[in-house]
Amino acid sequence: MTIVQIGPSNPLIDGRQSGRAMMVRRGVQILLNEMRHTLLPELTLANGRRADLVSLTDKGEIWIIEIKTSIEDFRVDRKWPDYRHFCDRLLFATHNQVPLDIFPQDCGLLLSDGYGAHLLREAPEHRLSAAQRKSMTLSFARIAAQRLLAAEWATGQTFGDG
Image 1 (cartoon, rainbow, N blue to C red):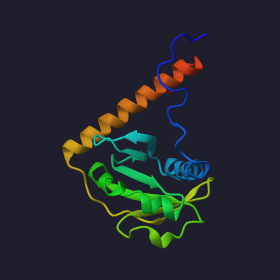
Image 2: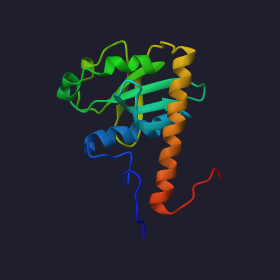
Image 3: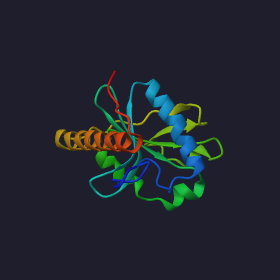
């Protein structure tokens, strides 16, 4: 029996994500995994904001994917422009009940159905500085390692690389 629990039982779900947002996220994760990206959901950035999904490509690019599930969700959230300082490419992800024309043209766009996603619009590249890339990559690695350790503690299993 666990006497002390360090952190939540599932660090990826904290109750703020709707079922629809989780559906969009799942489809995007499937697509990006097929594209050989490494993904980390709910990553807190250096400015205190939390990105819905951060992706590290096999070339070392950092993408941030902001999930929006309604027109209202997009209109009330004005923090997403700050994400550009932490990624090489910024994308929105949504589902087919949200009008696609609400999303800015200078961001990428993904459409998810929960079983996969389609890249409807490429995200323009705005390269991070070397210092910012290093900071983001180290943050990505640290948080991923902490989550792996938390999962091991929560399940009693040891996860290896093969």
